[in-house]
Length: 294
Image 1 (cartoon, rainbow, N blue to C red):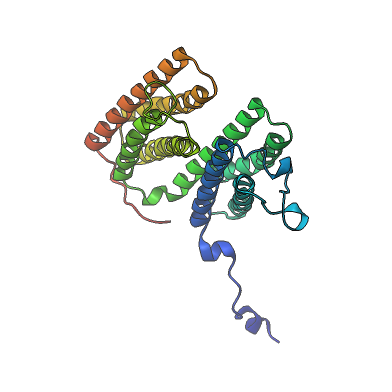
Image 2: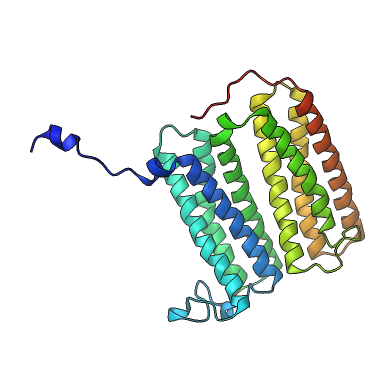
């Protein structure tokens, strides 16, 4: 058989060729987000120590792999989705490392996310075997760090298709998330009287929206606008987002009127910063860069 005929045989296309690296990264980000919110649901419903405190097994079915009750199901589905998020993280890192067309910044972010994944898995195990507030907090903030890195990486691979209006839309979404975050908090200014599992889930979803919105707005503005004050404004907004996310979590864990007041004050400052960012993105001159896919 000649080498020519061998070369003309149809070849199996890789998963990345079929699906696209950008879509793989976006799907992984969705899975990471779902893992975080399901983890919040497990904590809020008191299900973190369900599955008879087994890890990674549960409390029913063959080899105790399946949940036996509703609380166990919350913990089990969190682990189940986290497994696929881990596969996505590893797959994204390998693909980014092997594909020469991938931006090196993206590669660095997703590879670091892969390095943090076993740390996060170990912390997840410790929340079951040694449940303490310190371990729980480390588990949460490591997840937020992985989410943020994959959010930045996803924006970087999609940025050629994102227009100046995307920055405005992201800031508008962030502006809506700020009062929602405060309203769903257990502070005196919160609108809820019962900090139920559903309320907790919604508040942490608002946290992810805040983080994603400032990441998108910052990166798109850097690419699409020639406006240095806007860049400084968004950098300051990013710091405020982190502060609001941190204090919002602290107000749940520690009752302190002074801490509540600081949280609300920073949330107001963040809302003002988002409004100023909206104004500047609407009035700033966009760079004449074509929007095209790579």
